[in-house]
Length: 138
Image 1 (cartoon, rainbow, N blue to C red):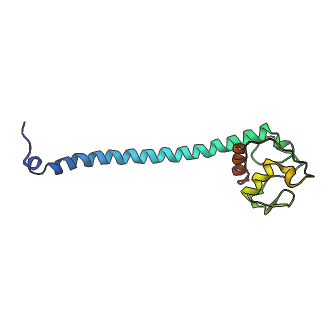
Image 2: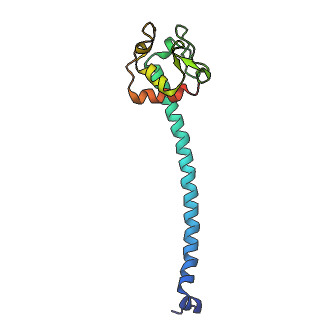
Image 3: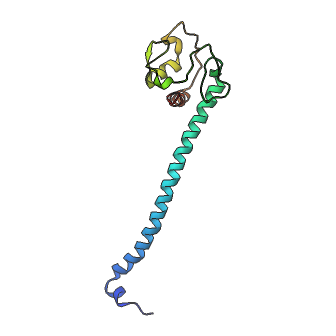
């Protein structure tokens, strides 16, 4: 089998051409990976919202609160959660509206405002984190 002069004299150049094609295929693979990652991130956001809505439904939050985007969450006993992200205060005006304070409020409302009608819902830490993210978008 004959080998070209350039391949015999410059074997690295010959391999570089092959590697160039491999890099081209690798570039396509990287682009596909980035697209899949973007899709996964979008899917995750959707999954987090679905998880939050499932928590809201299972804890019957909509029985007391109006919650936009949650079917049947039309309660009027507690405050509407519409526009919650724009409020400066929560918990009957006792706490600044921050994720940390929302975490404390959701964990044990009566420890912050003993006269509140909001019950301790027995939320797990992971559930609270999902709800904080969801409520921060309302």
